[in-house]
Length: 161
Image 1 (tube, rainbow, N blue to C red):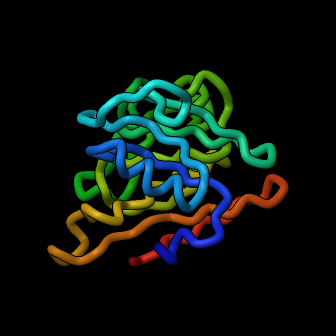
Image 2: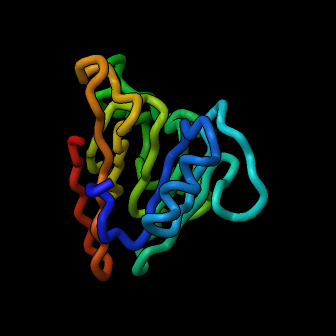
């Protein structure tokens, strides 16, 4: 998979359907993931139950499958193209969700790619390479996101496959 060539770490936000997905991705780079609703479980640290925080060069990346769960909820717009932030600071809401401050929130579930900033927090839904959202033609490949972290500076690129 050329889109992942040269990456240092792969973060997966669920809807794996089988552990073999992680095994394959791990041939490209180390993998850390969170479970989607129907995903299998495995022992060890590679696949977390609900949420996890990964630190890369002093940037804390909160990972969750569904941005609406666990609470506090951050709903998506009906078409999945935007987040609808509840009252209060987005940074405080995600601190409560992850149990610590985070700089980036990576999530999945809707399979609709999305990148937005709110209250100094970067929110990323990479879409899905295999089951893309409604914006994509049926049968076409979807997207993934590449996150570049360099000393606390963060850049994200959505990659159409």
